[in-house]
Length: 252
View 1 (spheres, rainbow, N blue to C red):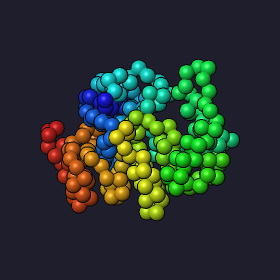
View 2: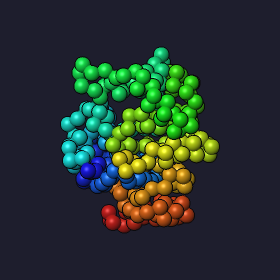
View 3: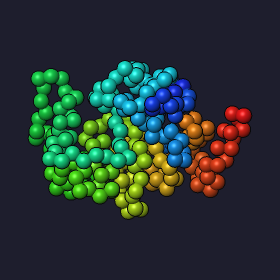
View 4: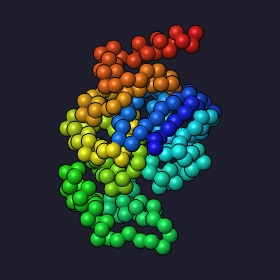
């Protein structure tokens, strides 16, 4: 049981951005990928979730032994792969509650419907766990939301949909320290033996609040170093240039 990426090459418009990434995330583990801008972190997340503009040139992605390569994004989601986007989009006229209900309904076999009472019971329990006001569920998805509210909404989706694996792409992007703590507390509340998490971030500060089991450094489309939280602290101290220089030396 794992989300397993092997020797993955991919990109957009014929340009290879991800160059031979291998990574395995087991349920209960938190992995963080750190890297400078343009290193291929967000491209990796798009390849994993099946974004239609991005293409896999070679390699494999398997979730619990099943290949994802031929699956459409919605099928990957139904199988239990979740993505929290860096820039979540607005859905005018659709409330948070109705959006989540529709997402859960899409997972059910044809002819089966969600019990509304059970749904709201579960939704409100998730909101309580994340210290969210119930009124939030009647707002339109991301419409007029602050940066922090958008990210909290994504964590709420994660709480209700209960994925097997979650990819959080630059969850700390644009958040002040208070909003960051709230979002991190939400993620920490959902951590557990059934959920594998991949955090994609540019900054070490997120990892002060969500402690990863493993840290990977991505430079120019490759994972060039792996370790524990100490690796992130080393990055904070010395920056990415040490890894860029090592990679340049290897490729010459």
